[in-house]
Image (cartoon, rainbow, N blue to C red; front, side, top):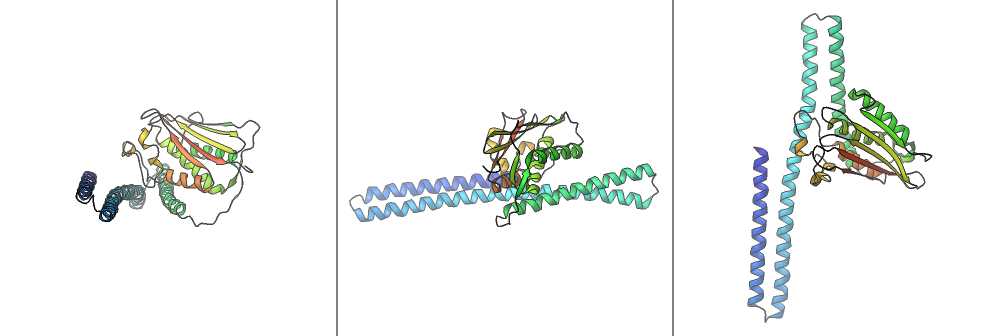
Length: 301
């Protein structure tokens, strides 16, 4: 209901802006016709009406952008609320069960394991929000060192396999460096965050069968390229650039079974830019998988 009302508001402001611009243009044309012999009045009149038209266009664009931004903020708040409330409710239920009745040791250990998983989920959500805020703060100090990017990717792949319980064949790492060095300059923790977010994103949107290939290559002397390719739900062409915006999630991906805050890819893009690199996505469409490419300058490049 709320999304429908916002769409109506966007349509209203667009229609209003178009009508006002059309009216201003009509007045401008009428002014020109009536005052074509008065050169000075005509000159200032054209400038005045052009300024009005520009102001109305900018105002309408600003209003529409704010409405969309508020919609994204609401979606983010709803997602974060769900990500926080669900594990808290689960932990509370387990604790109440342990408090009220005797539980066999095997079941007790299962409860402990489930509570630890819920705690990790809570911590992951909080860290995503904090890292998004840090990524948005451009005045942060840089602590860069030489990083073996290949070893870092290998560690992140192993962690992702363990965290998501996927087999080696479902998440494959293929270094294609040859004799080239995989050394880059950067913040190892931030780079680890970027790699982990790309891997988590690929696994999460793989669907029922995880099939993710991770490739690391050095196509030339100046670049280190990481590609994360999945065979999952895919992304429509017109959404490929929007997915890196803060709070944005592809509408087709915002299903109850797929959790997310809309911050992961925003953080990846911020980290790539901070390190002088870039990230972009490629997909042939829905149901055809997605390839994310993360590029960094190599050490000494």
